Image (cartoon, rainbow, N blue to C red; front, side, top):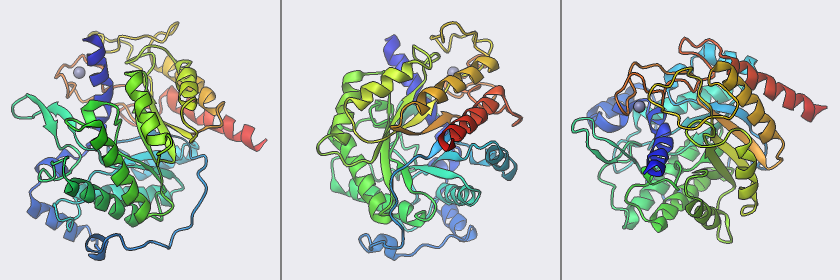
Amino acid sequence: MKKILLLLTVALLFVSCANPFPGDVTTEPLSESNTARATNGETMDTEDTTTKHAPVTDVDITEIGNIGFGFTEGNFANLTDEIIRKFSEAGIKTVRIVFLYPFSDVEGTTLSQNFSKARALAIKLYNSGFTVLGQTFWPGGWGANASTGEREWLNITGIPKALSDYSGDLYYEKMEDACYYMAKSLRKYVSYWLVSNEPNVSVYTGPMTDAQIIRFIRSCTEGLKAGNPNAKCGVNLLSRVDQARFNFYLRQLYGKNGFLDWVGLDGYFGSLQAGGPETWNSVITDCLKIVTVPIIITEWSYPSPETDPLNTFPNQWSGHERGVESQAEYVAECVSIFASYPEVIGAFWYQMADAHTGVCWECGQADCRLYSDWGLLYTDKTEKPAFFALSEAIKKITAENNG
Ligand SMILES: [Zn+2]
């Protein structure tokens, strides 16, 4: 039971940050989406969706390579010009941005407001010298229904409710079309794509079978690569939850019939999961026994609350009192471990800023620490020691690589 709870807890982490504008995808009437489309000035080429994947030839094909160490931020409003400048000056210039399903209708003719916002942010970050790792929508999420409180399968990533027949072909064709559109529309700004979210965790795949999950990933990947022939695609797998299932996905996606370019690893060792920074050594080396593609550490973190009255974090980083100084030490140790593997080509800290919202959205308790203290910045957006630790670690690696 404890194991199941842990699995849900870790996996749910990303849902809240990945859905910064829940109104855009779950409650917004179609008419408002239409207005949003008209007012935000996005134009859509109807050929993009009515012609089956018109060839894209105007991008250069580049080798897969190092994308650097950066962070994840789900709340787009936090990435102000001032914050972007702060990170840029600190040498932290890699960021992961989530793109929810881009259309607000089944036909794929109206852009969702969320996609337009995410696209504008990605372009701004690119123009500021950042490398953007784009993350596509995933099938959905098990969560609490806001009105009934009952746990149910929710379309939290904007996929229209009408598209829920995972056994038919239409669903996968629509996912491919949507990814084609996203990659094509961002081809000059985003070439690294994270497909779906933690497909080895049922929280994000709900009732789908393994075959359907793999078909989802394949369809999205084919769409991304058709829309941007330079797209470099991978998935993120949550480490150390069910090793047999983890390895099954590695073999299916990266084995002899594999079709992905890199593998993403997620882990929260010393807080939600057992271990500490050193745990990453075995996670990486175990993975390299199965795959030959580069690795991106897609989620890694350690929270800094000094108190944890509800025992939200049942695991401790041995020899360390939780707090902002330990968090900074954790950053430095992990970056040094990641940098020691030439196969690791990037890493994304979860997440940019602390979020003290009063009560935990998941359990409703004010003393819950599950979502509050993962940031590199405090809630007022000033720097925590972890911010400086990451900046210094990146500068040290860059100097070593250049020297
Ligand atoms: Zn909670």
